[in-house]
Length: 182
Length: 432
Image 1: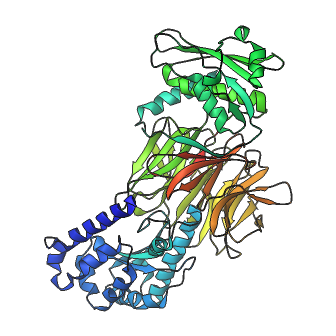
Image 2: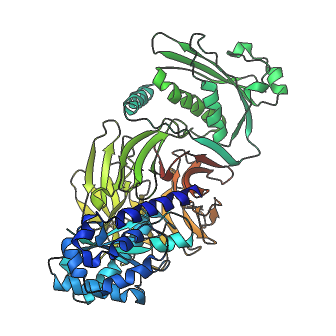
């Protein structure tokens, strides 16, 4: 219980920080300011990250964000089912918008960070995380992204997005984070 | 004796690093009913030393933890002899003791101590063993573990592993401020030393066969690399940092090579061998599935590893002779991974999935391949044999927290070592 409260405080703290109007990224990007707290919170909070994610890729301003933003807000997330590496249909738009942005800006580099939930052995999970990162990489390449723009890394179960040993936490941790590289 | 001095100098070196303060509590979750009753009489200690060291207490804790002994509570002892000639054998026999240990701890000048101890069979009144150990203050703990080793070997007939060390990863703090620590401790999880502390994940510590170094995976700079760190000097070097995966290091029995897992550009994990002197790489497996978690056979001629080439993860063995085909070893259940062989290579320990839980299982490598599931937790992973093969240490979960646990290789004794803070992961038991 204590831990849940502690996480709650952290999330609240992170959301407050992210929402702070003095944050330079918000000033620089007034048109996309509303997205800032959403994407920051989604890395930490347990609820609804996948639903807040989807519209982000559709607003046509991705290029604007990524061209200037090299901070932690450049991450986007694709979530996976247990023991699965297939990309679910609800993430097709997110993948497409990334593909569009990467093909339009061939100098952009994207890192795909594969993660698993904590179940199973740690080293085998590294393999599963790599497989998920590769699934996103293939999907992007099928839409014309150059191989040289993409790198993958697998953290397996070592970098969970949320703590906890139930399905709510695990669902948040089975993911690939799409991170633009400076 | 020379081995003791090596140990002592190593202890002193380690003591110079930052010592961890957390104390561990041993909980025996299930025991052996036929544990041997033994009386370990508190040693006579120097009068002037108010902080004198409890040799007998530590020896008793070691022997109790093995599950094979039931040491008598000193409060129940009606007398406390310190030499064999002072033992009233009939009295100790009436108190149902099979064995009795008596001894003294004496100061021999500045920072010099002498431990003398004798082990007797209460029934035959025969002296089974007697030793004298000379050490300094910092070496008292290790010397006491060695006393336990001598007693264990004399009575059980198997070399004791109390004077050995373990390594593991301890994760402290919560998101987003986690810290990953690589810890080296005595086999009883006391005398802990943090040898690496960083904000990026650490994984898969593996002892060199000589016990001088650890290989491990570090994600510093957000990419996985395999490092080798020498314990005495703290010196570390990056031995594998290829594009993609660099994981699961395992030392060859001669300490000259590492088996490890690397990936191709399209993310296919395979097992390779790295020659540490030449940096030469040899590919061992070549399959589109995940091949990982290698472990050397005792003769250094084969590797055990995990592969999901047939669907779910299963354990395979492949000879290092070129052109050899891997042979599948596990067939029960759809998840068997992370093989570790017993020191005599008669048994294979691994992680198996059972009723949605992950547990430690053991399989005979000589017989028909019958599998025995040893543990009952939901998240029991990362088994590692003691160098005498009697016990397996593994990572378990207690009230949502990662803890160390022990199980005897026959499954009869289960214990938990619970730290007051942090998630403990991936224990690796060092060599003798």
